[in-house]
Amino acid sequence: MVAPLDEPLFFELTRPQPLLIVLSGPSGVGKDTVLQALKKRNLPLHFVVTATDRPPRPGEVDGVDYIFVSREEFERMIAADEMLEYAVVYGDYKGVPKAQIRQALASGKDVILRVDVQGAARLRALCPEAVLIFLAPANVQEWYQRLINRHSETPETLQRRIEAVRRELTYLDMFDYVVINRQDHLEQAVDQIVAIIQVEHLRVHPRRITL
Amino acid sequence: MVAPLDEPLFFELTRPQPLLIVLSGPSGVGKDTVLQALKKRNLPLHFVVTATDRPPRPGEVDGVDYIFVSREEFERMIAADEMLEYAVVYGDYKGVPKAQIRQALASGKDVILRVDVQGAARLRALCPEAVLIFLAPANVQEWYQRLINRHSETPETLQRRIEAVRRELTYLDMFDYVVINRQDHLEQAVDQIVAIIQVEHLRVHPRRITL
Image (tube, rainbow over all chains, first blue to last red; front, side, top):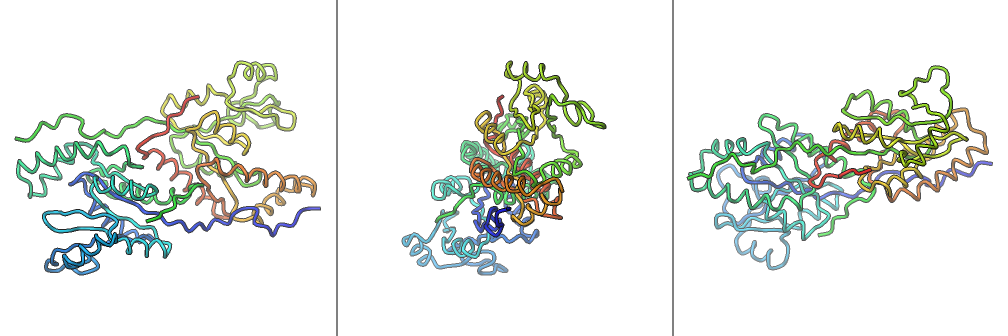
């Protein structure tokens, strides 16, 4: 006599454990370019829009390029612990509102955000279960060439960037994955990020994000 | 003055850390079918050939289907600790020779092997850095139908298999990943295993296999 089989012997695999994915890496490595290419894949992925107190530039759309708020509102949000992470960049506040991430996670969507390496280190402490991806150039010549191609660097800022990147590499240890952004192989880097997201959802012990 | 750039500021990413991948799961879930389909992807992946002391069946090729050895030789290998894992299946020895795995890993190839769930549990203890994948059916009806379709089961063996699978599921906790082998979606399961292998190679802290 065979036992009845209506019991859930196997878990039906619908595990709604959305991920918080943090893309970081040295300045000039191509984080924005990678995120733009990732957007085109149309995954169920929420791309965090950074909040700032600087005024919109011509053509910038509120809620798309940035969330534009007043300095007073930004400082209120900091005081009320409504920012997951923020920094002052060239005198302007930039930050990641917690509410936006919570909302996306609650809807079951994975969330991805980009921060600099120091910001990623702070996020690791705030949210140990985040998936931290370090975007790196294939080699230093490639990275250096990319910075020079921006035409916005002086010898002094280049020197500072090289020193910054040396410091940033000391943080590598706290990341989960390294993805190499090879010149002319952008889609390969995007493929790897997509694979990381896919595979993280196959974990027997899924990461549980609490903010 | 910009610092010289011939130093290895970024690690050039050629990390030859081959993986030991263990595919397991309840009997009847389709482990062999998945491995056959994975072979066709032509990845740089060594598929472990099991050693056995049973005589070859017509058509079976030594070194391809099994490594055929005498009972004396098999027992000598056990005594000499040359088997990573072995079991007696229907009165015949079956085992995984360590030398084969060491050789493949030394050549830089990832190694994949299939074992039953108890064997995977033993491998986890022997080699904590192995990547353990649990292959599961989408639901119990699908799994049950697959067993029945084999036409080799009696009501009694079916009952025993159901009890076995209940025990096996208690081991799930020690696995790294769950891959669902959905009926008529074999290639999706294979894609997921390929993605797991790819992503494991992107880890900042690669697994180091020692046997």
